[in-house]
Amino acid sequence: MLSYLLNRLWQSLILLVLVSTIGFAVLNLAPGGPLSQFALTPGMTREALDRIAEQMGLNRPLPIQYLDWAWRLLQGDWGTSYRDQRPVLEIISGHLFATLLLMGSSTLISILVGTWIGIKGATKRYSLFDYTATIGAMVALSIPTFWFGLVAIYVFALKLKWLPAGSMYTIGDQSFSDYAIHLIMPSLVLALVNIAVWSRYMRTATLDVINQDFVRTARAKGLAPRRVLMKHVVGNALLPMITLAGLQLPTILGGALVTETVFTWPGMGRLFLDSLGYHDYPVVMGLLMFSAILVLAGSLIADLLVALVDPRIRLG
Amino acid sequence: MSAATLPSSAASARPRWWQNRTIRRFARHKLAVIGLVMIVIMIFACVVGPHLLPYDELYIDLRARFAPPLTGSHIFGTDPLGRDIAARLFNAGRISLLVGFFAMVLSTLIGTVIGVVAGYYGGRVGAVLMRFVDAFLSFPSIFLLLALAAFVKPSPFMITVIIAVTSWMEIARLVEAEVRSLRERDFVLAARMLGLPNGWIMFRELLPNAVGPIIVAATLTVARAILLEAYISFLGYGIQPPLPSWGNMLNGAQQYLDKAPWLAIVPGVAITLAVTSFNFIGDGLRDALDARSDLN
Image (tube, rainbow over the protein chains, first blue to last red):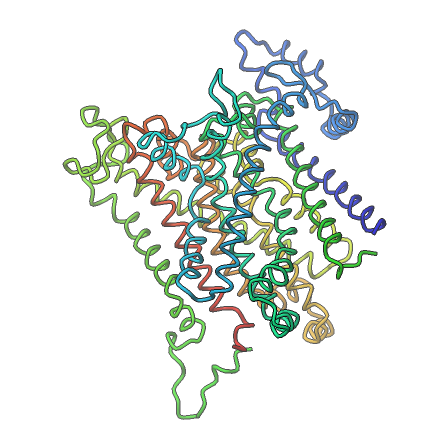
């Protein structure tokens, strides 16, 4: 188990190095590069621009810049924002809570609803419910998240006036129920795609388990069908779902970016877009790294969880 | 593999294309057929539509701003500048569908080459290439896509390229797995002993075995690419106005949501229809091409 853990950690580290190289290359090889932001300042001269490049170390060869950046990153110095001179890590952590709140609640919803739809679809296979769920999942996967958000805002905020159209809280209120009310629409919109994915996988996983011998044995023993379903079938069908949750993380994070834009949610996605608009390289780079770390950590944790929960897997 | 299609007697004629088992099986998948019909209709509308409408996509009529659908000859209404939405929708469809299609071609190409090379050579080359696949998969694709889009000139060509660059990984994985599972087979050994060059073995002997899964994945990639184009254009980093795309038509729609909801509804329905159709077609192709379901 320990050697597996170390091996897996080692692989994630290698991936992280690759990921950072790709991100760094993408941002620095792009036309303009980090200096283009400063070139826009009125009255900027060639000499002044060269001086800035000199001061910021941007005139050094790229591999050197990368190593310097990576070394500082390891020491916890993620750079300073071009926009307001604050440390990148501080800015990111300031937006982290909002994104995690949105992602967390939306994942909870999609797991609960998706699991239920998946189990029901598998136990009542080829029923009207099953067909509707199948087609519905396909359509849900095809709807652009931001457009679904717009439609939801139009119906529930503008026409019915049940829910607020955006942002995380009302200024001056900020009570728990205020957060909750603001959270409903964005987390449901973000959950839609994941409910679809989750229910499809859960249906397949349940069908895989339902035909196995131990389920027949449990039934033959005379256990109540409901007990067989909940304990023997669902328990085992949920195992591969842990891995899926890890794999789904990039999608949820990407979806959060779009959802945050539509609902003016003050999270990492909004921060990313704002920083792109300002050509704020350190923050953009920091967010790319941060999301990659989140994704890699997610899949690592998922793998470990599966190993812990499933006695059939022996990691050596 | 397709021995079942052999004619049972010498007298029977060569099977016609509609008797092909794959096509028959695809035709049984009702949703896939509906999807195919939808796409054909959409392509037809986008090609012919602009010629039938009295307005072109850039004609500005300030007296007819915010006209709701079915006002006069504006079947889908007009936008904040008084431009005809139907004309913009059809022209946008040309761009969005073309971007989706060519992004699919390019990403399938990248994914296939990387997958075949990684699967065939294996060892260190394979490991390095597949780590690259993993690395690209570790970014939420929209983050990477936006980071790229923000720093390149957002022409339709560049948008197509960057969408392809961020969506080749699944095909690479799929092809790698298929090629790796086949490379020790006897027919590969035979080809090697005949002295065939590696390139020939990879692309003429091994790759054809993965064509089915590649076609399915490519179809789903078209759907994904159309969605991705819509996402980045909606966020303002994709296709730039005045050139219309389904995504950038939605770009300004949010601020007029109360006043002119059709600005958001019309292009959104078009995107959803196109993406759903491609997804259904992919699903149908999966059933039709899946060698394993031969047994059932």
